[in-house]
Figure (cartoon, helix red, strand yellow):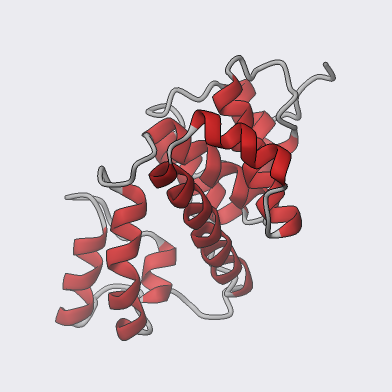
Amino acid sequence: MPRIPPLEPPYPAEVGARLTGMMPPGVPPIALFRTFARNLPMTDAMTGWGRYELGRRLSLGLRDREILIDRTCARCGCEYEWGVHVLMFADRAGLTPAQVASLTHGTADDGCWTTDRDRLLVRAADALHDTADVDDALWARLEKAFDEKELLDLLLLCGWYHAISFAATAARVPHEPAAPRFADVLPPAPS
């Protein structure tokens, strides 16, 4: 049961306008946004940052972004937000089923990762999750693959999705009907 129930239609005009602006045209608002809409000043403050994190101005490309988001949400145990991103973006980001499974249950050393860049993204998300830091050795490797803008976006993207994961999980946001669950992806075979 949701601890903070998502708003249900019909929405007051101001809420409906805000929710419509948060979604692609013609797509009904997801439960997370309908939960956030219970606090419109907070929702307004978050909207600009959320658009940046998911928009074209982010210095990281779609694939990099989704690897970081999916891994962060999985490590936080946030099946809700992980499922939304896998449903909406995994195919567009070129993530294979094996890579989605690895992001959910595996490691950067799984055989499905064929580029050092992808492995570095998984390692960075893990380091930030585990220690709230990146050690000097990993940072040196990241600096060779990513410029300063990308590094800053990487750090804040992981932090943002920790916050989203905390809110979605603690508020018990109900799962989107079409979104996958962690159990829907099999752990990667041992390498």
